[in-house]
Amino acid sequence: MITTRLIPALALTGLVLWQLGGLVSQLQELNAHPGWLVLGVCLRSVLYALFLCFPIAAFLTHEPPHSRDSRLLVTSAAVAATFLLTGLDLLAPSGPELWRSSPTVVAIALALTLIGVSMAVAGAHSLGASFSFGPQCRALVVRGPYRLVRHPIYLAETAMIVGVTVVDPRLVPLLGALVVIVLQVVRIHAEERLLRSTFPGFSSYAAVTRSRLVPLVW
Image 1 (cartoon, helix red, strand yellow):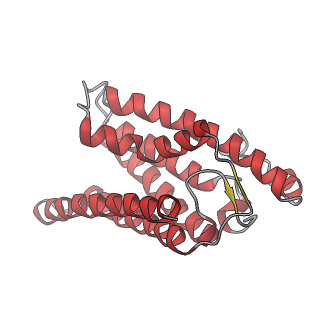
Image 2 (cartoon, helix red, strand yellow):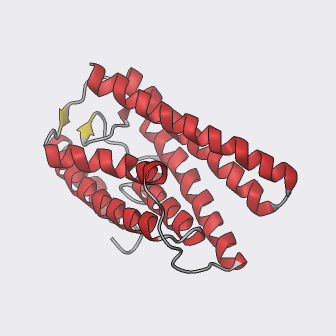
Image 3 (cartoon, rainbow, N blue to C red):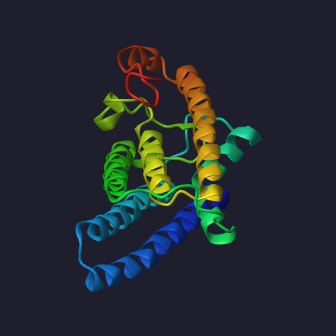
């Protein structure tokens, strides 16, 4: 009970508080130097904090799953994909700057992160109490952004990672971002294996919604 509900909820609550702490600094920057880019960064933090509230609520209220994949590799991949970049940001030096992004690229990257975090909120809302870290089956969700791709939250997180990395392209976060994207692919394969064995309707859904992560690509 504690390991599957309270600990994940507390970990995500810590991320919410971390986001809100950053938001305070961003609002101070907005007050000192008003501008669309700073406003966009503030909005991104608000939306990401909102997104994190959905899984917190899910962990505290969801019912036991119909099935789960408890393999250590899969569980470790899920936890690392969720917390690796935050851990690197807090504990590791960021390393050298790899390139300098132009103001236009920064604006495009910020727009990408806003699209990503908005999709994450929509995906989490569609999942409701079915949200989980590792592969667990409570319901086959096919509504909302799940009509676009089979794993819209992972697509949203990837968009946010790319956007943030482009704005501040440093070696350690870039390497961490590449690792997280690989881990997301591991999660996708594990989740789809479990969904296919649990819900007979998953094959029909996959036949209609062909893209796992990136529309028209994969």
